[in-house]
Length: 119
Image (cartoon, rainbow, N blue to C red; front, top):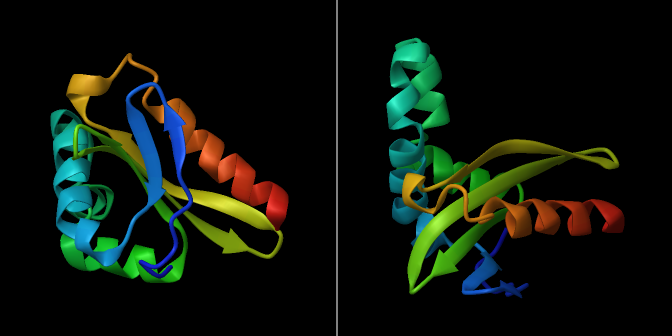
């Protein structure tokens, strides 16, 4: 989606917003860091898709909504969805290991649910 949209939700010290193009590098880095500990469970191609490089993240932003969770100006979580008919599919979701267990993913998942109600 475009960077001009600013759907925001505030949960504690986390702000959820749609990801504009300038978040691509941060999202790619977050995905790699979030899944690095599981890399041995993937084949090389599977890990490359899961820990998406910047080009793939940019494509995802163009194909469907991508939200980021931001705390203290740092992207700490992300979720991307793709609409298929009247259904949304979660393409990927991740939070940085340092914020796991702090319910950072809850508001990200809620944004996906809000959008699904509008389809």
